[in-house]
Image (tube, rainbow, N blue to C red):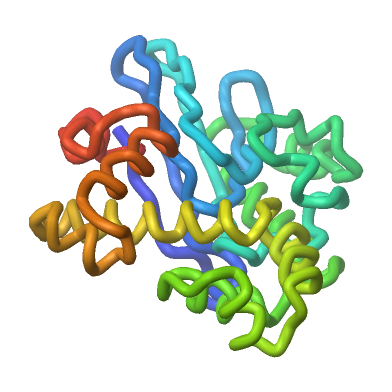
Length: 235
């Protein structure tokens, strides 16, 4: 069972949602790239799920419980105290980062109080650390349009080197990787809304349906039909 809720209104510019998941069976849950970063409390404690560039099958035992706070793409800023690219494709215990993990643990003596403790510390930490790059949303939007990196840089008034540096800092990826991921996520949303795949390919900015299939397999490790199945919908 997986459920998510919107964040507190005053944090909606930085957070995408808060979520809770309980595994009903032993399984490998497929996580696919979405340009987001999550703070998660799982069976092994608090950890960070960094920005992914490929599929991340996550083993779960029956009854395993996960509680998470998801940051919007490009909205992490200095929250975790390390350059974002150092978290790329990694699951890092929060205690290994320059972050007061014990504040959350001490505030949540029971599993039912974990989300409350996480939200309180996220709010405090966001107020005390540097904010996200204000150009992050515009950068994502321009790359989602299918423009080249050079075109995106020109549109935003950056050199290509500046664009690369700011994208790496805000998302943990180089611009081309970010473009591939936001295009993939747009295609996934369209396909889940029932749009035929040939039309998905055109609307999401792929060359053709074969290009769409190639990128879906590259980023998720499975076919689009597998992602659209009930088992793949929580990915």
